Image (spheres, rainbow, N blue to C red):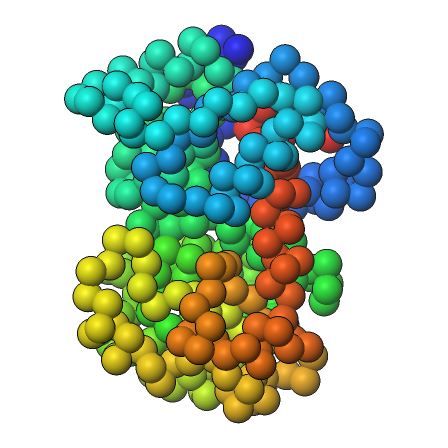
Length: 310
């Protein structure tokens, strides 16, 4: 277990907290590990990961658990009903106790303040596996996937169609830090959260453009991305579906992108809603590579947090 002071701990909380060099380091580590997994079978030997799930999960759960075990570590999975955290123990006390048992903690939860509170009191790294506000692990896998297929994403154009949810926010963070353009096509009712565009304009080299028309966003784009219209915390299902109906990524919309554009979706997909079968199963789609790369990107995030030698 780590005995480092909290100020020395390497947390992975959000992409906007990192500089370009650190993000590049993690992406390079992911590529290196993926190329030669047997060479790193003992990378996490003697290390343990605790995973806290306050939201359901398929890809985050499996990729973190398999990734940790493939590289020699152990895993403990915790859900609210399994923990005293679900019975009134404070987040701070939970962080202090887990820090005595494990080497790193991944949490998938609601508000980002819960992740930050864990990080404030933990003496081991905390990884943001998803909050309602951001999804940084997903975007690291997405960046890895794009660059596997098309080379550096720097200077490219990424188009988003739909509401500006947690995944879109993390894409904005990445655009600013890594120097590419992201065009956000969204209805006014589901636009960027307060402060995001101001932060983007002030902070980095990427370009963030907000438009109302998916066709305008997608025209000539190198990558087209969407996500489910209804997230786990949304209750206005019918209203959201009606407002977002014009933002579906279908074959007609994809035809406006660059001829070699990629299509991405973090999954799960609601086929026939935000994306058609023809797109998600079509020649532009890399969603299965994207899903696989959650495994490799998260190995690299763990390695960076644990300062493992890759």
